[in-house]
Length: 113
Length: 114
Image 1 (tube, rainbow over the protein chains, first blue to last red):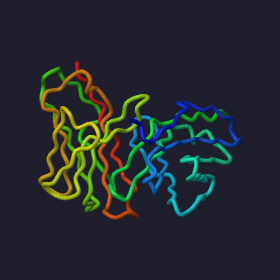
Image 2 (image 1 turned 120 degrees about the horizontal axis):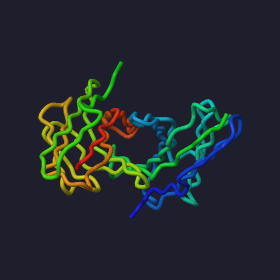
Image 3 (image 1 turned 180 degrees about the vertical axis):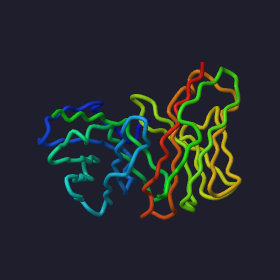
């Protein structure tokens, strides 16, 4: 029972264009969402987060959008750079399991020069 | 530079062996976690600990156990390794509280069980 789903295993975009990574969740108790980025042979690193009281959070080239009614969040990267090529995981947590994150399957982003 | 250190980057073990994966963090974090990463399945939580000598099962604890004798160290134990435990194992830590749910991960241990 996958509570957090990333239905696109991979995405390829041209350098300078927008990358949009999507994530869906099923547990309505989730109220905090995070995106992590992972390079090969390294651990995931935190990228950006959003609380359910917001619908948008921006940090430089990265913006996360949250649509609670649709139980959907997305990560926008503008403009995309070759160094953004990595696996991106979305994660979620609920108040009842503080500190415990549920991760999606990951999306591999390739940014072509 | 604060970090989470996993003792081995690569391990090759035989079926039936007892395997120890070690993790140390230098941030004085209360929370520590063990995940495994498999293609198409993402990161799945094996065990976690909110304090010394305490542990809680995650989503896939079968075949694993853990030990947390000191705050900075969290060990994952495969009692009798099997081929389906071949995976990337990731240790993470965090401070308690909702605003500190950002996990800090180690670099991972790629375990192969033959």
